[in-house]
Image 1: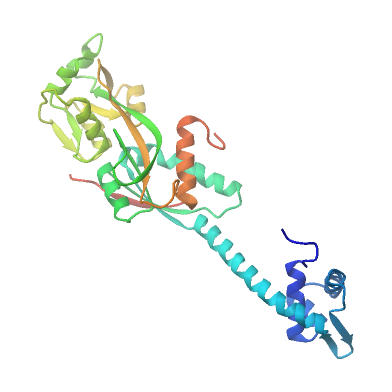
Image 2: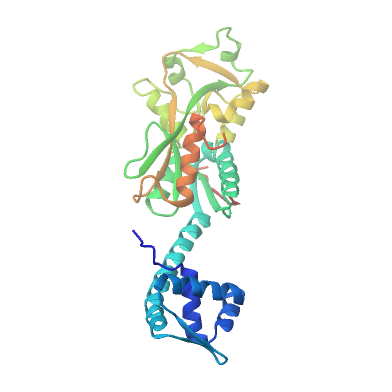
Length: 325
């Protein structure tokens, strides 16, 4: 614990500048303070030390032997203080810097934009310069590969469990909903219900291998005789359009089809005894738990958003965008 005789850093800095310039007035000008303020700082230090530090004359200000000794000590203290200041500046720059993210298509299109906007507002509230974010939207398998290869700082994936070999945190859940177009025979049934066996035996419109949606559906239908896909598409938007056009049933994330169900463009079909829940995970490579800087803030916000505890309440397709967040 520091004792009561330690001068403040600004006063020590003043004394070092006086030693270099030979003038209290020149030192005050260089540091941007008044002559009166400079004299006050010297008097305060002299009171703490218990001895004069400067000899003043018409030719300027000279250090006393005690003052020279104090300058020697002060120089080392100020060097350490400059290192501390540089370190803090680097930490703040890390929090404001650039963050690269890869996210599964469902998360990238329906959840991540809201998380990023909320994070931007939070940073502004705290007086931080918004972090610049580059986001790549692709399937969950590719996201995990990009994180593992160090190509991005943070990933968001969907599936039955988090990828192996990566640090992770659960940030929410989503449920796949079986849907058909309004003209499909299943939509005409009064109960709008089919069995898991019937669903498995029906050619479905599906996402490409490696997507979290495809993985969860395959896991749910495991052990049942399954028909080949009716269509294999690389985006949720393409699946929704194909189903609406009558290509066949599909299992699509609830976040992605909320508006389609409300407008009647798609019709929900209930499937008894089938668990189509998928988990949404933030993933990152090694390091700390949770990750540091803006990545940590984004993961915390995403997890909080799912629980209501936020501070304010073709083959694989890849897209990249840069957002000022």
